[in-house]
Image (cartoon, rainbow, N blue to C red; front, side, top):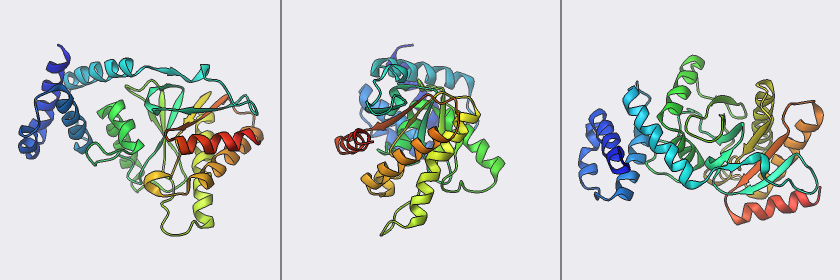
Length: 264
């Protein structure tokens, strides 16, 4: 089955489940790029439901091929910052990183982003991992029976990501001025992720810029909290974690982290 046939099969399968999107799908151009975007949109809006083995086999083949095309980045070979051999700054797409776990800035329902093709990291991670990730998150949340509180962490498999696992954490949403509680909750996100990773024996963790962007935490203050908390956790316990990667996407964030870690 070539790429076009994979896209046709996957889109048709999802439209059979969700016929209300048939009209929008019919208006979509037939070229591969447009059909791939349609697939991502349909995956984004699909609620957690049973998934057939046939669908997963073709979905996984497509996503695995895309991961290879993007290029996998081995987190263990990235150069550390001069001030601390345990810490790394890497600018790029977090879904390319081969590490024990990447961190997802999730929302309180912990099911991924349902906005079609949205630019948030939650959407990117779920889209690259595949529908299995939403399904596992749904089972975790059903067992928990309530929304995920800010500052905690959950661990799931990485599925089609190069990372073995995904750590999901909900950071504070800033509305107006940053409060002390906001700062404490953001620090708790970093601490909870590292503590859970250590409990599971993971050795490498890549953090996104939690609560910045869509959640509006000021970038520099968020980075200061991230660096301070990570160093505190690594210094206060003999954790198995050997490497923490601060993953940034924008030049502005890269400059902030370089300045912070160059001076410490």
